[in-house]
Length: 60
Image (cartoon, rainbow, N blue to C red; front, side):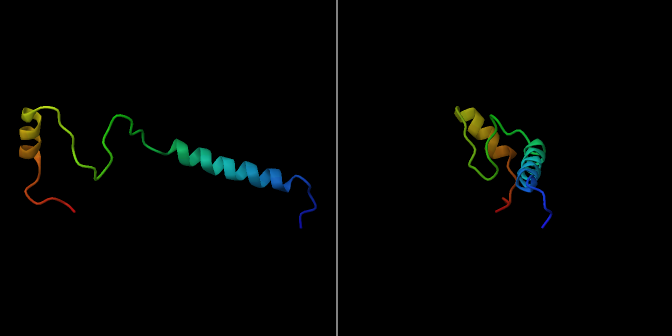
């Protein structure tokens, strides 16, 4: 429709630009638990502290 042989390349560049913008807007989550995953603790003291810090009514 446009008469340009380069249109497939332009579409590919536009899709790549959308992907780069999406990746740039993502938050870093390395070394943090995923949202909704159960917490992990290594000592009984950490477990007790975690239980005390939780809200009385969990958000499920």
